[in-house]
Image (cartoon, rainbow, N blue to C red; front, top):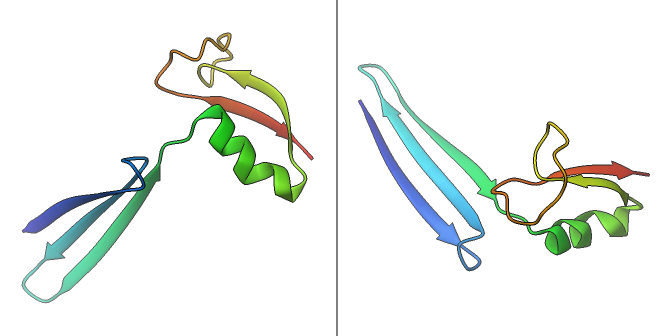
Length: 78
């Protein structure tokens, strides 16, 4: 048996998914964190650590960046 819940933070850009798995002999808890980034917010996260933008794409296949896709693919260089 399992129980699941989702919690949203920071204007819905961070989601925590909590899963509790209950078996005959054990109870285990898992929390999965997801963060949604914009181009600007991800660059703000990595720039202080010496990374620079080398390429930006709409997906991991290298489709040209339009800013309209549900995904982002960054190529960063340090």
